[in-house]
Length: 504
Image (cartoon, rainbow, N blue to C red; front, side):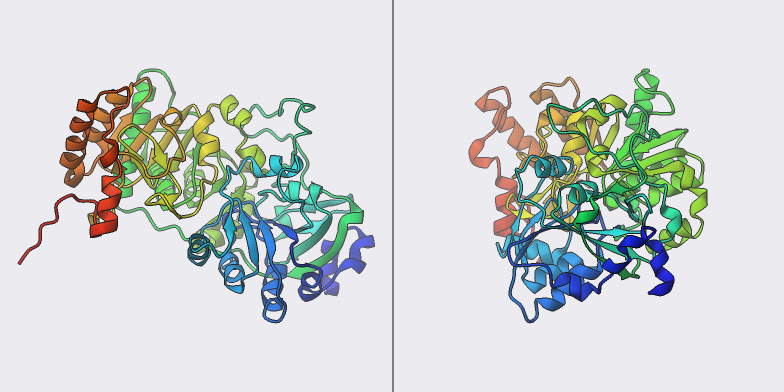
């Protein structure tokens, strides 16, 4: 420990160093914890694992607030340990998902820009302990985050107690990467003074109240690599259709070859779509997003992206080794901010982002379901897609047209759960094509979506539904007793297809 104590530049804090087990012993039943971490990056690791061990002999439950999903299988082991009362605002773990859907613990699905605001307003339980991962603590009283910022700034400013995990796996060269800015109280704040993607408006670290520091834990554990699947034929076609749309925007003069700042959601499809920009004519691109994934760094490597602002860096194992092995190459092209700022409606609207997010399904009128399988079973959460869709210059949702070997159509008569209404959705894209819904009435949207985006095996079925709906009339025609027929077919027959041919 002696050789590592230098990471705590304020020598008055040296006496606060404790074991993870000691820190975990301070957590009591009913408390609310604010954990650092955003999509498998920069998550507090040692103390949460010590809590799981403690749960083997002590019974307690706590609320877990984070930035987004956690790495190191933390959501899995916390869920299995049975110590979670309530979790928010996002998760992406199969075990936790199963327990949420079994009502074994509560889950609050939130727009990621709103968690910090709600904590400051006292609309959520007070944070008893902020547990945040850091590279170091500076002599002038700032916590230097690691590979994500998430909600850590607000957790630290609002918590009753702070535990800092200094992770020796992360190099001290990360200092200077972050830009920490927290808006003032609502009704008393000034406009957020960010007008360009590469603006710096805050501090390089998280300021903290010295009296709130309860303990400092040393740990050494790398972030979990992303679970991104490489681009495939279908995602390549989605990318081609999206690029065709952007090319048309350039042709009519709404964009230039520099486009506008790009936001791309987390996940394999969104990453693959951004990857498709590599061979495009677009250049001098900027990224203003939540998660900086492999594709962002690939675009930086070939000179397509000249600056990227995000909330976390989440990379595959191979890309992680390359990026952190030569980090100076990227230092002047990156900023990490709090998610409240990366996802803030004011900034999204001001910068005029092109927003690309993934849908589970969308319907013939352009409503999007991002979260609930068959309308009831939570997948991961809405994340930041709503923050961006409502406020972007162009809100684009992408998905493959079918899933589960063709038994599921991603385009349905009416989505079984609505996360993004037709009013917030500008363009929908599948490997079949794209539909630009801007300025179209509901009947125009339905025709375009069925013609351009639906898989051939479902086109006739959707056309039949729509034609019957037209006989009922209305601004947005529906056959109410059949609006969820695709989903009931799936529940009853294992496929959304109306007719199943059985070969003998």
